[in-house]
Amino acid sequence: MNHLRIFAFSSAILLASLLFSVIMIEIIVVVILSLNTAALGQTSSSSSSSSSSGNRTQTWIDKLNNLKIQFRYLPENPAIDTPTELKFNVLNLQTGSHLKDLSARIVVLTNSGGQQRSFKFTNISAADGNFSVKYLFPDSGSYQVLSKIDSKNSSTLSSFNVIVPFQPLGTINVSNLNPLILPASLAGIIGTIVIVTWLWRRR
Image 1 (cartoon, rainbow, N blue to C red):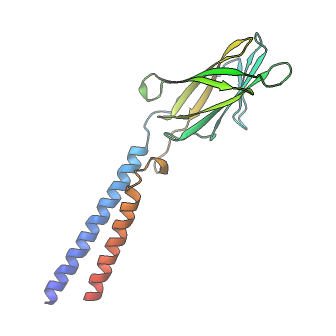
Image 2 (tube, rainbow, N blue to C red):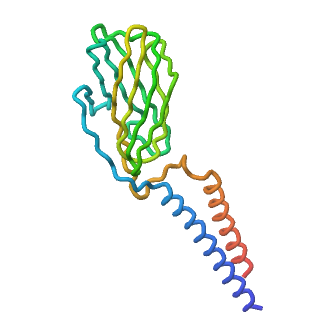
């Protein structure tokens, strides 16, 4: 009888170890899949665009149309597959006042991941000169954000840069995880503890 109990206890321990190993493998697979192996790109600065490293605000000056376009992105360190807000502020270069009743188109370009890709935002309207769009960067690397902004009296093009940093090993974007993996893993661990405790008390 004791041999049967020892065998049952050993089997339960083995089963619990296997279950825990499966859960850990799932977590490791999720971590690996969340990583991006693309190399971090570099972009050259334009003479018409200046960047402030403190607040990451970039300014595009269009002297011909008397416009100043300010651009920034939030968060300041974008993460892959997480919404990043691209914010634009269009001002009169001489007076500093906001331009009214604008329409805009935004194109996001990248060569990261080894292929040329683009994404377009169209039919954007801004009554007070401010507008923003949200974009999910698919890879780490360098991105170019092009804008075409039209007003009643002018039309201007601008270009800005966004750097999406490489995510190091161990970085997990929780929003990318399958919502069932974490609860299932937790339930498996709790179930394993309950079974082992029950068998231990029966000895």
